[in-house]
Image 1 (tube, rainbow, N blue to C red):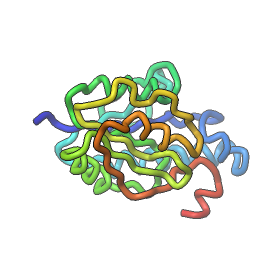
Image 2 (cartoon, rainbow, N blue to C red):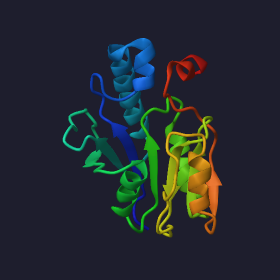
Image 3 (cartoon, rainbow, N blue to C red):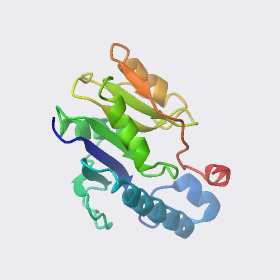
Image 4 (tube, rainbow, N blue to C red):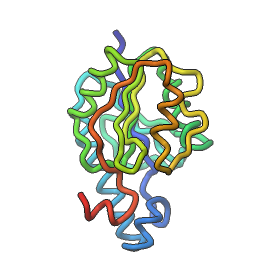
Length: 189
């Protein structure tokens, strides 16, 4: 069996770009510092996942200077979140692939190992977020043609919309975690 793949989907931290809801409350510099800290911490934790290929899918494609020892790099390319994620999965067509966001403070290497374990018996695995989205999606080799069609991104419907595209597939779920979009979620963690 081929090595499984972990893809971290990240907007490379830059001043004034990304985490806009958070920046409106704490300021651009604090939002940048949070983004840098969260991404570096996640990459450190995921280096503990043994036996997997580690990939940092960066956005923007040309701005991939963020230090990521142990990770190969790829650009996310153009399009909405679904188009970019589908492109990343297509790079590894017959392998188990787990894709995570970069703003999940509670994720651990054990979560990734559990996702790969679930993919031994399921076609897909999801890590639901409290806000109706998801912090992780994993797929085995058997995938829907359009796994992210008609998903209302950045809404409380994102997980339900994606699950609809997997209705004829076996799927599993992991624990519910928070992703960090605004200061309220930081306070709650």
